[in-house]
Image 1: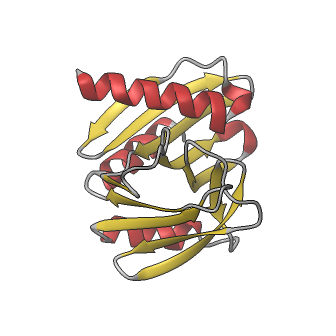
Image 2: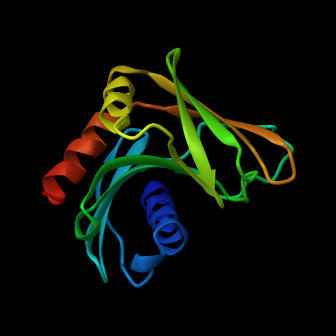
Length: 170
């Protein structure tokens, strides 16, 4: 039950801050797949589905990170499918890059506010394939204050969560 509450809280936060157009949406848990959740909501621009996970480790441990989530989003009304992103609980340094590593394969993300998205258009499918085959993912970022932060994510359950959002948001 604690996991379901955590997922719904995360979904509400994500819906309110990462996807402001869908702030009125009420999220519904589709499936809890190990360390990943699949969630859907209806909003002003149509159905939204996303797989999300919280980090298993946050560094530095003494820093207030706020709510941190990695998402894979489908927003039907905006014709967006399988968009990976990370949302952190603080503003990222303007113009900085976020480094993402999946079992040694590296990707770069651009930042805006408290979020980051893949820098290279068209890399979404490649990253998701790498994530599905991988076991661990790390993300390194720099806060607006200049603090170096890093996050470790488990990839256990990702495929199940992605399957659920693909089925729900056809």
